[in-house]
Image 1 (cartoon, rainbow, N blue to C red):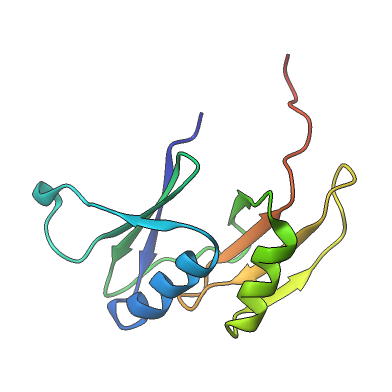
Image 2: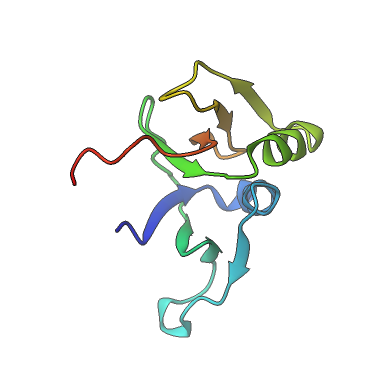
Length: 120
């Protein structure tokens, strides 16, 4: 099980990056105090996204985060309505998918459901 992903974010985009994850259905959760200031964590159905402020953030060109949104239509509509760049892509295993770009430049794949497990 993957517990979390940590994404580097320019401090200037942190507020908009926070709004992106909230619109995607994630809820902000407390960050352990011993990590210091500036970190923002989110959670949805047991999966967390950790935003790490960085003066020189690394944003992968092709690498991305994929999240499952069982309420795909609602989440897609909320993201588009909030002004985030999102476009529907081809289906995978008969399920809808879309790609969104966060204000920090990270690509996020939105999946209606995950594909069948590769292992049994």
